[in-house]
Image (cartoon, rainbow, N blue to C red; front, side, top):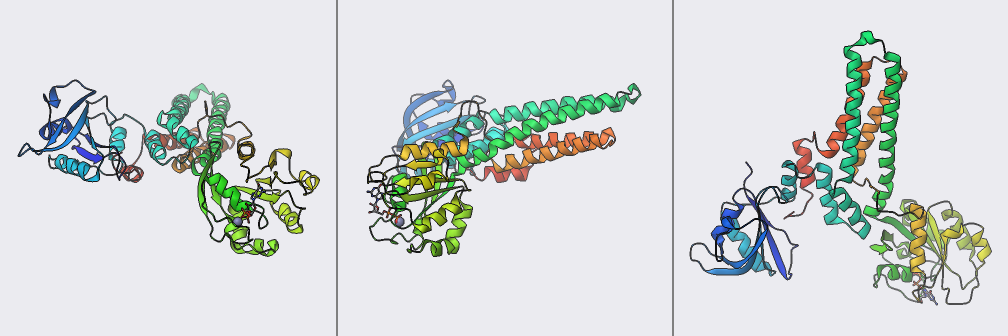
Length: 457
Ligand code: GDP
Ligand code: ZN
C-alpha cells in the first residue's frame, strides 16, 4: 500500500494561513505524534476540525498554534486518510511544521501526487485529473469554468457513453463472426456503417469545441495595429487596466513588444502590442518589418485602430486590405473628437459587427469591443451552461485518433473487407477513447501528466 505523503498545499510566500496536507495510511497517526489537544485525532469523528498546538514530540515544546482537519478515507480527495494542518502563514512557521511531519516517517509528496493518488484510487478519471491542472492554471473565469466542468466529469461522461456504444457494436459484430451461417452480412454492414457514422458525428462535435476551448484556455492571440498616434498603446493600457506600455504624444515612442493577458468580458486575450515595433510614419515600411508581418499572420485576432477624428490615410487603406479578410475588428478611436474619417469607406469593407466606435481616452466603448470579439469568435453565443469544451491537447489527439480508426472502419465496410478486420478498427477507436479517461493509461504517461502539477496538489 502507498506510503504517507505530505506537502504544503497553499502557494509559496506569505499569507494569512498555510495548509499542510498529509495523505496515507499513517497520516492520522503521524499527526497525533506532533499535535497536542484535548484528545487524540485517531478517536475523533471524520470531517472534524480541532484546535491545538503542533509540538516537538521529544520535548513537548510548542512550535505552532494550529487547526487540524481529519478526513478519513474513502471520503477524502485521495480516498486515503487525509489530515490538513492549518497554521500561521509565515514561511518559517509552515516549514517548521512540515519538517516535523516529515520526521514522522512521512515522505514529501511529488508535484501532483495527491491528485495522482485520487486517480489511482479510482476517485477521479484521467481527464478529470488533467482538468485539475487546468484549474490551477486557468487564466480567465471562463477557462476556470471549462476546467471545473471537466473536473465534474462532463467530457468523461460523454466519452464513456461513446465507448459503451462501441462495445455494443463490437458485440453485434462478434455475434456475426461466430454465427456466419445466419447470412445477415448485408444487414450488418449497413448497421455498422450507421453506428460508425453516429460515433463519428459525436467525435466531430466534441472536436469542434476544441478550437473554442483552446481560445478560452490560452487566450485569443491579439495584435493591435494601426498608424502612429491613433491610440494603440492607450487601448492596450485600457485593456490591461494599468500602464504597461508607455503612452506619449510623440509618434513612435512605444518600443518594446509587450505581451499581456487581459480579460475582456470574460474572453481572455493574449495581446501582442505590435505598436511596440518602431513606429515610423511609413506604415508600409513598418508592415514590411518581419516581426510585424508575423504578428499579422500569427494573431488569431487583429484589432486595427483608426483615429476617426482625422481623414483616412493612404497607409490605412493599404492596411485595411491586409486585415479585412482575416479575423479582424476596426476600432474607430477618439469618438470624443469631431468625426473626420470617411466612414463609408470602412463600412464598405467591414460588416457592422466588426466596426467599433469608441473613445479610449474617455474609457467609452471597451465593453462593445468585447461583445464584438465575442460575436466574431463564438457567433455571439458564448454559452457555458451545457457545453463541454475539449481543451486538452492530449484529449484532442486521442479524439482524432479514435476518429481516424472509425473512418478506417467505414472504409473497410465499403471495401468489402472481412468483418473481423473491421472489428479491429473499431476496437482501436474504443482503446483510444479509453486512454482519454485513463482506462489503459501507461505508467510513464501518468508520471508525465501528474508532474505538471504544483507541489501540494
Ligand atoms: P499609438 O501611437 O497608436 O500607440 O497611440 P497612443 O496610445 O500613444 O496615443 C496617442 C495620443 O492619442 C495620446 O496623446 C493619447 O492620449 C491620445 N488618445 C488615445 N486615445 C484617445 C481618445 O480616445 N481620444 C482622444 N481625444 N485622444 C486619445
Ligand atoms: Zn504606441
